[in-house]
Image 1 (cartoon, rainbow, N blue to C red):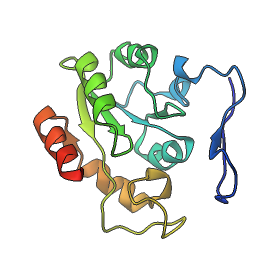
Image 2 (tube, rainbow, N blue to C red; image 1 turned 60 degrees about the vertical axis):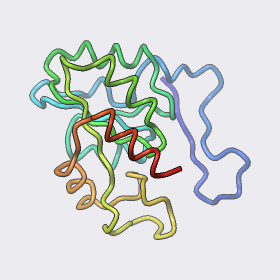
Image 3 (cartoon, helix red, strand yellow; image 1 turned 90 degrees about the vertical axis):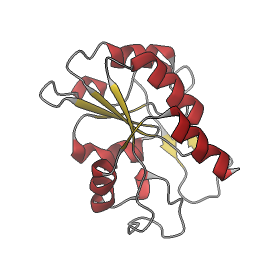
Image 4 (cartoon, one colour; image 1 turned 90 degrees about the horizontal axis):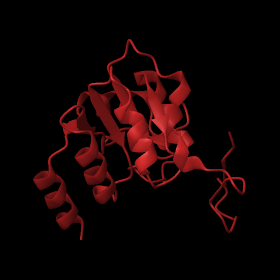
Length: 162
């Protein structure tokens, strides 16, 4: 399918790179490994987030910030999935709303947020909103504390950040 590389030194001009012509908007990393005996799917943006969320089962990632209509349709086709958990970056309000508009009410949309007071295993100075830098305990806690998507609450949270 393709690959994705990430600069962890902070010295490269491009932080994340994929091969030319790779159409990452047509599938999800991990999509072909989804298990029908797990009634949820967890969507994240990057491979590091995907790997850290994977112990919860049925983790996939878009390999980028955008979630395309094609990818949303792939989720809709998963007739055994009742709950869709979104482990996206905090600035993803419009993406979350777009996904929820297309999936609900057939599939419930939930928001995952890394706990603010948990340990970070990779880099203590890294973004505290990134699942790729979160311990397994933090990932499990986030799943247990997931919040059902609510436009009013999401909008209020975004206004408070401005």
